[in-house]
Image 1 (cartoon, rainbow, N blue to C red):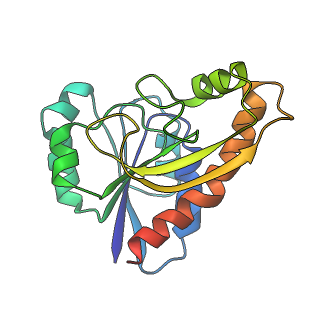
Image 2: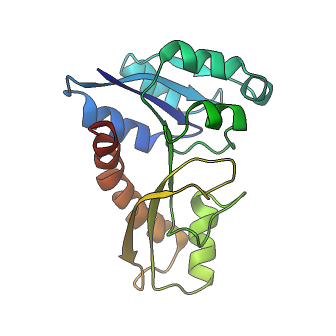
Length: 187
């Protein structure tokens, strides 16, 4: 049985999508949802699906407490699905090529610290880009600089707002993120 550990900070649409995708898979299970936000809607998703959840603060993340919790679960893959904090180097080094992230743009453009969610879409709109997309990548010591696993682009010439871009990008995320996770775990 391959085990996925999810990290999220907010509403959890990707978490919900991943749980739904794997719910009837006998060889892959979701072993936990970790969040840095006590009020994250992802906690409701965890409760609804009866998935172990854990809320932590920055000190617990940086001082090894979260790493201890991760080690107890022994995940085959750690999936950052809307998790906004940088993973500490100690976790990245203990789980090389076992932590992935999804970014709502075609990296290396529009990545880095502070570039997430609607901020990315607003900047793309302001720069009059004709396309955007998603990047699924391994997590390393730097924001959005890990090796790319998968990219998919989409035309946004008809989009007039960051919200319209977000709808298109989220559709790509929901289509491709679970499939990419499955491919990584099938190796």
